[in-house]
Image: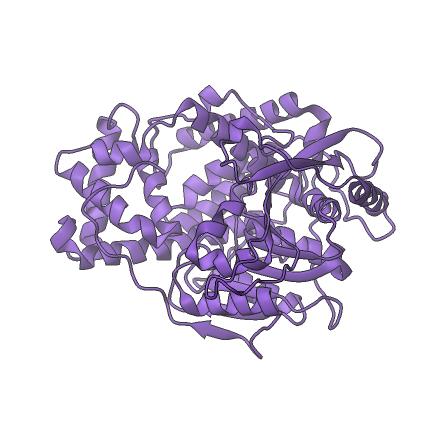
Length: 533
């Protein structure tokens, strides 16, 4: 996800009070609100109907072992008998096979429902993780269940523009944009916001995180689960936190992996400011690693020299885009993935090295134009991302506020700051009402114990978010992967983290107190580039 949180270590930003959009912000719905009553009605209907699982939609290209079904939810929970939309749900039943003892049959524990984040990401592929060794013990006990949240194809897909127009490349990526360039991007953002409203109509207002949490409650009921076992990554942690606040008695177990800061004052404008600052540190981590492997990549034996090579590549691409499609913005976007995941470091370093040595193909493969199918999916994902974040909370509606805050920030965090602005700027011109974020807090005994997982140097969802959620959910326990920055730590290469995950999901057992794990091994240089992702 792009919007996350970290309180700035370099000093707090002086921000103008946020103002609501053109429509009045909507107050959170209380326990006796029309939305709460509508959710109960929808959940009751879903429990009675259940889910009929069969073949998955062909467009999703899911293996035959995964079965899919649909769950009807109200577009507007205040009117549960009004327009309905269908959410697509995927499932692989528990194997009941102990991977350590083939003669032992593992008892089932119901469904484990997963949200991969975004907002705008689909979880339909999630049940496939049962084939990965790190997931086999969990897959033995749980039905692995994923779903496409509202707006994410094929669940009433949202679109804001022609997918053919979504990827605009090659583009510049100035770290100190001119006034003219800012005006151009602001106009583009305003057009995008206008087009979202024009395409979606009044339905646009109903794509937000509170409704996503209500949808989760309806899916729980449709699965026949008395209480929800849920795992959320990135934005999925914010969704899970809202569910915990709205439906605490319906929670069985919850895992929050790579945590978004749920503080209402952070959602979402300040989150993005803080995320941009955190990515500067991760960009430094990547450059230090590349410098340590100068013998393999020849990009320089200091982070400064690696930065010089990146700047040289950006300047060359501005003059002549690689493959006609990769300009400075595409280069920056490709390198941003290295800030999310350590696994990208060797491939991105190889592509940068090859380009500077005269071979642009690895960079074109990793950062070039997407396929038509990829453009459709990316446009849909971006539309949902934008709608949810813009609808979720008030945003500044005066570009001068964005300009001031991000000009200050870019002086110390140039790598990601302005790219993050352009990604979120449609929210300045949004034409739907804004929600007021919930103040997530649970009292002792109100919520079962929950597990919070975080990497100490995660930039996409910085560590302060995990500390904040830990403070707000009574009885939660935080497991930290020390001195690591990959976005999402559950069921990966860290055996210590996985032991805590399995103990919790399989036995309901948590550490007695917050604890930590040593970092995963650093990636090793690989000479061959990875195809575009």
